[in-house]
Length: 69
Image 1 (spheres, one colour):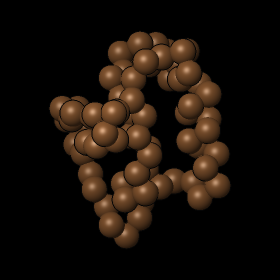
Image 2 (image 1 turned 180 degrees about the vertical axis):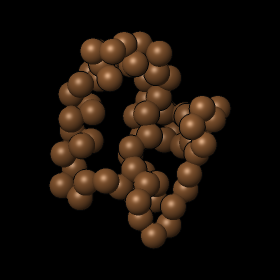
Image 3 (image 1 turned 45 degrees about the horizontal axis):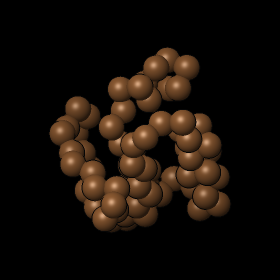
Image 4 (image 1 turned 30 degrees about the vertical axis):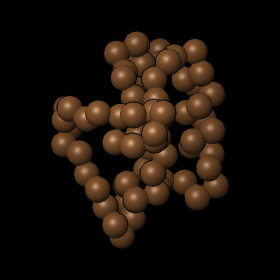
């Protein structure tokens, strides 16, 4: 995504519960460290029993100061 310029157009990232070890979150932080957008990890988003979904292309407000969507 970085090589294809996706992060240049990104306003925020929401990471779901994909990786219990935390490796994905660490990788995302490393790859995006030069960019200035909020990144929120939320265990209740993704492939868990309590799913929250956003349609592709949905407009979402992310407040990085308060860690809320």
